[in-house]
Length: 114
Ligand code: FES
View 1 (cartoon, rainbow, N blue to C red):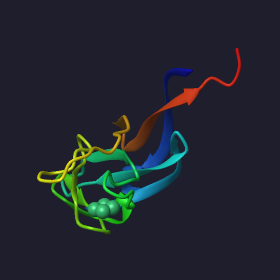
View 2: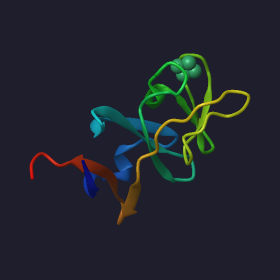
View 3: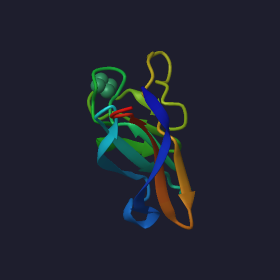
View 4: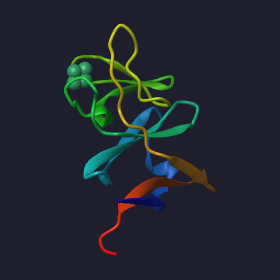
């Protein structure tokens, strides 16, 4: 059973390079999360899996508000997680907040008991 979101502080925006990313080893259903920072200092979070063959999007190239998968060059929208046409598929997006320069990701925690 899923509970509501728990906001986890993951550190300052300054720790993520401009047009770069950082991989978190905790996340959605045991899958790592990739945090992306654009050239305009916007931040996005996606499950770190390409919708094609699960390539590590955190190792891709950020351009505008998209990331290009390092394996076969699919382009994934950072806001929606959608693959750009003609490719099809979607990576799960993760809720994210930026408060006073600190990044928080919203995780759904499974109820362990009760
Ligand atoms: S795994 Fe990402 S494009 Fe193939």
